[in-house]
Image (cartoon, one colour):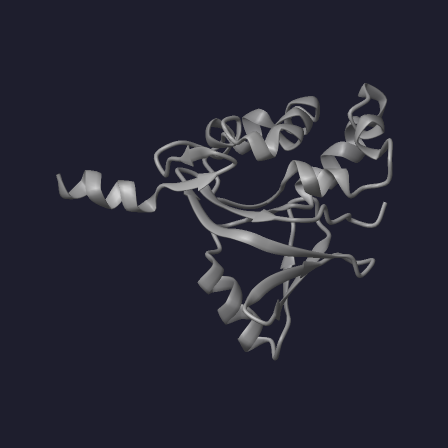
Length: 170
């Protein structure tokens, strides 16, 4: 019984759906009504198998509203077959190898005198910093994205929900 209770405490609600620590990143994300654009993009980019892999991964998962902030037509253009590599670059810019909890990220920010740099799966860097009590990510162009839900544990990593899509400088 103790294991069930501990598991229930680790389950978080994202987009109206429970995110189970026993399931992988994709298996959880497909149930979030706030991440339908992200899931469609992951499928179009052929990244489902990767994100269902062993990991561990830290995924900064943009909501549908985050994708809606992009200039009109950006998402539909990225979802076109001929733009698959660009889409992969954008999506893998939101993924870091390893499992970094919010606490780990905040410790790295403090250790770095207010900033921590993380190398993403696509090879570019993301900078994390604090804005009050919020963790904020900054891409190489200076665009910022706030973590709105942290530490959504998965069987192969962790998801941190973000409110803005960061771009790898395309």
